[in-house]
Image: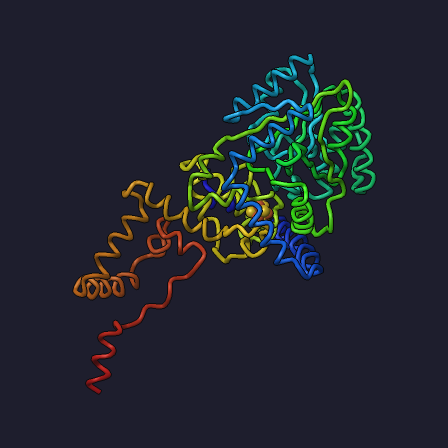
Length: 454
Ligand code: SF4
């Protein structure tokens, strides 16, 4: 996976790239307006960051407390060390219930575990019930954004997909009409599913309850109609007390879409009579990230997507160019921690302008961590790559006055006569988008000497 290559592909369709950039910026603008309407916004960010610091420093204690209280409430807790174990646990519950079709509300964690293909391979039909997720599921694509999964698709495209999959009227792009068609289609799936899967936005250690935030109410619909609810939760999703929820709920929706509150913030505490709730607590590299001093606070992320909406690189390269479940600035910190080799280009997909850190509601120093990853990656890469060889040569030239003088002379002479096929060859990636500067006739030293003689 190479981000620059994928980004270049995305940029081939210039009008679409421009539209994508403007659409995301529109969401960023809404976030700004909404956050500025709260005078204590910065205080809330500080508070959220401090609460998450406390959680990360005492994660073991809070996890045990959460498990104890949730179990007391009648919830079954399962622990998964990695994606494979997570998927096996989910499948074993489905087998126990003899369930062949499930409904699922938006969960980045299940995308991280590739739960859909795993269940489908094992004969279970999976229906994503978030509208955006259902659209990308029809295309057999992952979400391109963690909050707005189908943000890369225009309504005309969605109309074509619905015409093919849901037999809607050809060429009818009316969003209301399309949404009604999806609603009817999903209603049948909701009614048939015995098991509903959701993600978890916040787990409250003090009470053992958890909160799921959606705008469409699809999580609630699925869970209330099914007999069994499986909630898939990353171990970092905890907050200590229920009173802390207000801080995060006020920040989350405003940062994500500019709404003052998410439409449905549903609390699940204990199963109703005859029903079951299971929580699968997943590590999958989170404890490793916790142990990395420089990167641990990336685990504070509440997945609002604001860093993506503001990032000039994300907006102009699209979510798929990152090749990771969580794209954008925060994904570029998290993904190298999971597979450094595969995701080594991601920390370089940033201008380091710091806009991501400025909008982050939990004050993660995103751009600083991207810079840290660059250093780690450069150290980890073989010393025989083109960039480090070039740097070594440059070091030799700049530290030896004679070499500097001679190489300057050679470059001034040769660049004038070399053909463009060499000076702008593939080796000169810098020159792909830029012209080389006009060459001076003499070096500064020579000019200075001549000036003195004058
Ligand atoms: S890193 Fe911050 S801004 Fe980005 S998704 Fe997470 S919480 Fe939101």
